[in-house]
Image (cartoon, rainbow, N blue to C red; front, side, top):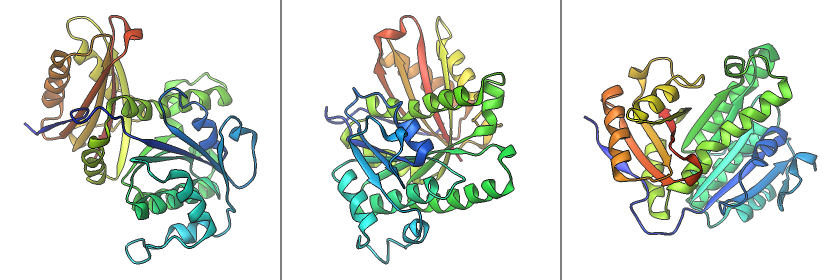
Length: 305
Protein backbone atom coordinates (compact mmCIF):
# COMPACT_ATOMS: atom_id res chain seq x y z
CA UNK A 1 0.00 0.00 0.00
CA UNK A 2 1.15 3.56 -0.74
CA UNK A 3 1.94 5.96 2.07
CA UNK A 4 -0.69 8.23 3.61
CA UNK A 5 0.34 11.81 4.41
CA UNK A 6 -1.74 14.01 6.68
CA UNK A 7 -2.91 17.61 6.72
CA UNK A 8 -3.64 19.46 9.94
CA UNK A 9 -0.88 17.82 11.97
CA UNK A 10 1.21 20.97 12.45
CA UNK A 11 0.65 24.18 14.37
CA UNK A 12 -2.80 25.67 14.95
CA UNK A 13 -2.42 28.61 12.54
CA UNK A 14 -4.51 28.14 9.41
CA UNK A 15 -2.88 28.50 6.01
CA UNK A 16 -2.98 32.02 4.59
CA UNK A 17 -4.76 31.76 1.24
CA UNK A 18 -5.27 34.38 -1.47
CA UNK A 19 -7.73 33.76 -4.31
CA UNK A 20 -7.48 35.79 -7.52
CA UNK A 21 -10.50 35.79 -9.81
CA UNK A 22 -9.19 36.39 -13.35
CA UNK A 23 -11.63 37.80 -15.90
CA UNK A 24 -15.41 37.83 -15.77
CA UNK A 25 -15.80 34.09 -15.21
CA UNK A 26 -13.10 34.00 -12.55
CA UNK A 27 -14.58 36.97 -10.71
CA UNK A 28 -18.06 35.42 -10.79
CA UNK A 29 -16.68 32.25 -9.20
CA UNK A 30 -14.68 34.34 -6.72
CA UNK A 31 -17.96 35.84 -5.49
CA UNK A 32 -18.97 32.37 -4.24
CA UNK A 33 -15.96 32.02 -1.92
CA UNK A 34 -17.36 32.24 1.65
CA UNK A 35 -16.29 35.48 3.36
CA UNK A 36 -15.87 33.89 6.80
CA UNK A 37 -12.78 31.74 6.11
CA UNK A 38 -10.15 34.46 6.27
CA UNK A 39 -9.33 34.05 2.58
CA UNK A 40 -7.97 37.12 0.80
CA UNK A 41 -10.05 37.80 -2.30
CA UNK A 42 -8.64 39.67 -5.31
CA UNK A 43 -10.60 40.49 -8.48
CA UNK A 44 -8.59 41.01 -11.69
CA UNK A 45 -10.02 42.14 -15.01
CA UNK A 46 -9.15 44.35 -17.97
CA UNK A 47 -11.95 46.80 -17.10
CA UNK A 48 -14.15 47.42 -14.07
CA UNK A 49 -17.01 44.92 -14.27
CA UNK A 50 -20.04 44.17 -12.11
CA UNK A 51 -18.57 40.74 -11.35
CA UNK A 52 -15.96 42.57 -9.23
CA UNK A 53 -18.59 44.04 -6.91
CA UNK A 54 -18.04 43.39 -3.24
CA UNK A 55 -14.32 42.63 -3.63
CA UNK A 56 -12.15 45.32 -2.09
CA UNK A 57 -8.87 44.29 -3.75
CA UNK A 58 -9.22 44.95 -7.49
CA UNK A 59 -6.63 44.85 -10.25
CA UNK A 60 -7.18 46.38 -13.69
CA UNK A 61 -4.71 44.77 -16.10
CA UNK A 62 -4.46 45.27 -19.87
CA UNK A 63 -5.02 42.03 -21.77
CA UNK A 64 -2.45 42.91 -24.42
CA UNK A 65 0.95 41.43 -23.61
CA UNK A 66 -0.17 39.48 -20.52
CA UNK A 67 0.66 36.08 -22.02
CA UNK A 68 4.10 37.27 -23.07
CA UNK A 69 5.00 38.49 -19.60
CA UNK A 70 3.54 35.34 -18.03
CA UNK A 71 5.69 33.17 -20.29
CA UNK A 72 8.95 34.67 -18.98
CA UNK A 73 11.04 31.94 -17.36
CA UNK A 74 11.14 32.84 -13.68
CA UNK A 75 14.21 30.68 -13.14
CA UNK A 76 16.09 33.08 -15.42
CA UNK A 77 14.27 36.35 -14.70
CA UNK A 78 13.24 36.55 -11.07
CA UNK A 79 12.69 40.29 -11.01
CA UNK A 80 9.14 41.61 -11.16
CA UNK A 81 9.67 44.59 -13.42
CA UNK A 82 6.34 45.23 -15.15
CA UNK A 83 3.59 47.31 -13.49
CA UNK A 84 1.20 44.35 -13.82
CA UNK A 85 3.57 41.99 -12.00
CA UNK A 86 4.11 44.51 -9.21
CA UNK A 87 0.38 45.09 -8.82
CA UNK A 88 -0.26 41.35 -8.50
CA UNK A 89 2.64 40.94 -6.07
CA UNK A 90 1.25 43.66 -3.83
CA UNK A 91 -2.11 41.87 -3.66
CA UNK A 92 -0.83 38.35 -2.91
CA UNK A 93 2.32 38.98 -0.87
CA UNK A 94 2.69 37.11 2.44
CA UNK A 95 0.32 34.26 1.66
CA UNK A 96 1.06 30.53 1.85
CA UNK A 97 -1.17 29.45 -1.04
CA UNK A 98 -2.35 31.52 -4.02
CA UNK A 99 -5.30 30.27 -6.08
CA UNK A 100 -5.96 31.89 -9.48
CA UNK A 101 -9.45 31.12 -10.82
CA UNK A 102 -10.37 31.59 -14.47
CA UNK A 103 -12.46 30.49 -17.38
CA UNK A 104 -10.15 29.58 -20.26
CA UNK A 105 -10.72 30.29 -23.93
CA UNK A 106 -10.70 34.09 -23.95
CA UNK A 107 -7.98 36.72 -24.22
CA UNK A 108 -7.73 37.64 -20.54
CA UNK A 109 -8.59 34.94 -17.97
CA UNK A 110 -6.00 32.31 -18.91
CA UNK A 111 -3.05 34.68 -19.47
CA UNK A 112 -3.89 36.58 -16.27
CA UNK A 113 -4.02 33.35 -14.26
CA UNK A 114 -0.64 32.32 -15.70
CA UNK A 115 0.84 35.70 -14.77
CA UNK A 116 -0.49 35.28 -11.22
CA UNK A 117 1.28 31.91 -11.22
CA UNK A 118 4.57 33.43 -12.37
CA UNK A 119 4.44 36.17 -9.73
CA UNK A 120 3.53 33.62 -7.06
CA UNK A 121 6.51 31.47 -7.94
CA UNK A 122 8.90 34.44 -7.90
CA UNK A 123 7.58 35.34 -4.44
CA UNK A 124 8.24 31.77 -3.27
CA UNK A 125 4.60 31.00 -2.53
CA UNK A 126 2.59 27.91 -3.52
CA UNK A 127 -0.18 27.88 -6.11
CA UNK A 128 -3.18 25.87 -7.28
CA UNK A 129 -5.20 27.07 -10.29
CA UNK A 130 -8.92 26.33 -10.67
CA UNK A 131 -10.06 26.65 -14.29
CA UNK A 132 -13.17 26.01 -16.37
CA UNK A 133 -12.68 24.73 -19.93
CA UNK A 134 -15.09 25.84 -22.70
CA UNK A 135 -17.96 23.81 -24.11
CA UNK A 136 -17.17 21.92 -27.31
CA UNK A 137 -20.01 23.87 -28.92
CA UNK A 138 -18.12 27.13 -28.35
CA UNK A 139 -15.98 26.34 -31.36
CA UNK A 140 -12.50 25.21 -32.29
CA UNK A 141 -10.90 28.64 -31.93
CA UNK A 142 -11.98 29.13 -28.34
CA UNK A 143 -11.02 25.57 -27.45
CA UNK A 144 -7.58 26.06 -29.05
CA UNK A 145 -7.06 29.23 -27.01
CA UNK A 146 -8.06 27.31 -23.89
CA UNK A 147 -5.52 24.58 -24.61
CA UNK A 148 -2.77 27.16 -25.12
CA UNK A 149 -3.67 28.85 -21.85
CA UNK A 150 -3.84 25.53 -20.03
CA UNK A 151 -0.41 24.55 -21.33
CA UNK A 152 1.15 27.85 -20.20
CA UNK A 153 -0.68 27.81 -16.87
CA UNK A 154 0.48 24.27 -16.06
CA UNK A 155 4.07 25.51 -16.33
CA UNK A 156 3.49 28.42 -13.95
CA UNK A 157 1.55 26.94 -11.04
CA UNK A 158 2.11 23.92 -8.82
CA UNK A 159 -1.13 22.27 -9.94
CA UNK A 160 -4.12 22.90 -12.22
CA UNK A 161 -7.57 21.64 -11.23
CA UNK A 162 -9.64 21.68 -14.44
CA UNK A 163 -13.43 21.55 -14.85
CA UNK A 164 -14.50 20.95 -18.49
CA UNK A 165 -17.82 22.71 -19.09
CA UNK A 166 -19.08 19.83 -21.23
CA UNK A 167 -19.45 17.75 -18.08
CA UNK A 168 -22.12 20.20 -16.84
CA UNK A 169 -24.41 18.59 -19.40
CA UNK A 170 -24.05 15.27 -17.57
CA UNK A 171 -24.53 16.84 -14.16
CA UNK A 172 -27.49 19.07 -14.94
CA UNK A 173 -28.68 18.64 -18.56
CA UNK A 174 -31.92 20.60 -18.10
CA UNK A 175 -30.54 23.66 -16.31
CA UNK A 176 -30.50 27.02 -18.11
CA UNK A 177 -26.93 27.97 -19.04
CA UNK A 178 -26.62 30.84 -16.53
CA UNK A 179 -27.85 28.64 -13.69
CA UNK A 180 -25.48 25.85 -14.81
CA UNK A 181 -22.52 28.22 -14.55
CA UNK A 182 -23.61 29.15 -11.02
CA UNK A 183 -23.71 25.46 -10.10
CA UNK A 184 -20.25 24.99 -11.58
CA UNK A 185 -18.93 27.94 -9.56
CA UNK A 186 -20.25 26.40 -6.36
CA UNK A 187 -18.54 23.12 -7.19
CA UNK A 188 -15.26 24.80 -8.16
CA UNK A 189 -14.86 26.65 -4.85
CA UNK A 190 -15.52 23.56 -2.74
CA UNK A 191 -11.98 22.08 -2.89
CA UNK A 192 -10.67 25.54 -2.06
CA UNK A 193 -12.87 26.00 1.00
CA UNK A 194 -12.17 22.46 2.20
CA UNK A 195 -8.41 23.02 1.92
CA UNK A 196 -8.81 26.30 3.81
CA UNK A 197 -10.60 24.52 6.66
CA UNK A 198 -8.25 21.54 6.83
CA UNK A 199 -4.78 23.00 6.21
CA UNK A 200 -2.34 24.72 8.54
CA UNK A 201 0.64 26.81 7.53
CA UNK A 202 3.01 23.92 8.13
CA UNK A 203 1.05 21.76 5.64
CA UNK A 204 1.74 23.92 2.60
CA UNK A 205 5.12 22.39 1.75
CA UNK A 206 3.58 18.91 1.70
CA UNK A 207 0.64 20.16 -0.36
CA UNK A 208 2.98 21.85 -2.84
CA UNK A 209 5.06 18.70 -3.29
CA UNK A 210 1.92 16.66 -3.92
CA UNK A 211 0.56 19.18 -6.44
CA UNK A 212 3.84 19.38 -8.35
CA UNK A 213 4.00 15.60 -8.71
CA UNK A 214 0.89 15.76 -10.92
CA UNK A 215 0.37 19.13 -12.59
CA UNK A 216 -3.17 18.47 -13.84
CA UNK A 217 -5.93 17.43 -11.48
CA UNK A 218 -9.63 16.60 -11.49
CA UNK A 219 -12.25 16.83 -8.74
CA UNK A 220 -14.95 14.61 -7.33
CA UNK A 221 -17.28 14.98 -4.33
CA UNK A 222 -19.46 12.55 -2.46
CA UNK A 223 -21.50 11.96 0.67
CA UNK A 224 -22.32 8.91 2.72
CA UNK A 225 -23.91 7.86 6.00
CA UNK A 226 -24.40 4.75 8.02
CA UNK A 227 -22.09 1.78 8.38
CA UNK A 228 -20.57 2.01 4.92
CA UNK A 229 -20.39 5.81 4.73
CA UNK A 230 -16.79 5.97 3.51
CA UNK A 231 -17.45 3.50 0.71
CA UNK A 232 -20.61 5.33 -0.41
CA UNK A 233 -18.94 8.76 -0.35
CA UNK A 234 -15.93 7.56 -2.33
CA UNK A 235 -18.11 5.74 -4.85
CA UNK A 236 -20.05 8.95 -5.48
CA UNK A 237 -16.86 11.03 -5.68
CA UNK A 238 -15.29 8.63 -8.17
CA UNK A 239 -18.46 8.85 -10.27
CA UNK A 240 -18.15 12.62 -10.60
CA UNK A 241 -18.39 13.85 -14.21
CA UNK A 242 -15.00 15.57 -13.82
CA UNK A 243 -13.20 12.53 -12.45
CA UNK A 244 -10.90 10.26 -14.53
CA UNK A 245 -12.81 7.48 -16.22
CA UNK A 246 -10.58 4.73 -14.82
CA UNK A 247 -9.48 4.68 -11.19
CA UNK A 248 -6.31 2.75 -12.01
CA UNK A 249 -4.79 5.75 -13.82
CA UNK A 250 -4.83 7.84 -10.63
CA UNK A 251 -1.37 8.20 -9.12
CA UNK A 252 -2.06 10.61 -6.25
CA UNK A 253 -5.08 11.95 -4.38
CA UNK A 254 -5.77 14.81 -2.00
CA UNK A 255 -8.79 13.99 0.15
CA UNK A 256 -10.64 16.23 2.60
CA UNK A 257 -13.29 14.60 4.82
CA UNK A 258 -15.83 16.43 6.96
CA UNK A 259 -18.42 15.23 9.45
CA UNK A 260 -20.24 16.51 12.51
CA UNK A 261 -17.86 14.60 14.73
CA UNK A 262 -14.63 14.22 12.81
CA UNK A 263 -12.49 11.54 14.51
CA UNK A 264 -9.52 9.33 13.69
CA UNK A 265 -11.88 6.42 13.11
CA UNK A 266 -13.35 8.31 10.18
CA UNK A 267 -9.88 9.01 8.81
CA UNK A 268 -9.10 5.32 9.04
CA UNK A 269 -12.29 4.33 7.23
CA UNK A 270 -11.63 6.69 4.33
CA UNK A 271 -7.96 5.87 3.86
CA UNK A 272 -8.71 2.13 4.06
CA UNK A 273 -11.30 2.41 1.27
CA UNK A 274 -8.93 4.55 -0.79
CA UNK A 275 -6.12 2.03 -0.50
CA UNK A 276 -8.45 -0.74 -1.65
CA UNK A 277 -9.64 1.31 -4.62
CA UNK A 278 -6.33 2.86 -5.73
CA UNK A 279 -3.63 0.84 -3.93
CA UNK A 280 -0.67 2.44 -5.75
CA UNK A 281 -1.71 6.06 -5.31
CA UNK A 282 -0.08 8.44 -2.83
CA UNK A 283 -2.67 9.89 -0.46
CA UNK A 284 -2.73 13.28 1.27
CA UNK A 285 -5.59 13.28 3.77
CA UNK A 286 -7.16 16.03 5.86
CA UNK A 287 -10.42 16.61 7.67
CA UNK A 288 -12.47 18.92 9.84
CA UNK A 289 -15.68 18.96 11.88
CA UNK A 290 -18.86 20.40 10.36
CA UNK A 291 -21.89 20.23 12.63
CA UNK A 292 -24.25 21.10 9.77
CA UNK A 293 -23.73 17.66 8.21
CA UNK A 294 -25.67 15.80 10.91
CA UNK A 295 -25.34 12.06 10.29
CA UNK A 296 -23.69 12.52 6.90
CA UNK A 297 -20.02 12.44 5.97
CA UNK A 298 -18.72 14.48 3.03
CA UNK A 299 -15.62 13.99 0.88
CA UNK A 300 -13.73 16.20 -1.55
CA UNK A 301 -11.28 14.24 -3.70
CA UNK A 302 -8.62 15.75 -5.98
CA UNK A 303 -7.13 13.13 -8.31
CA UNK A 304 -3.86 13.59 -10.18
CA UNK A 305 -2.09 11.46 -12.77
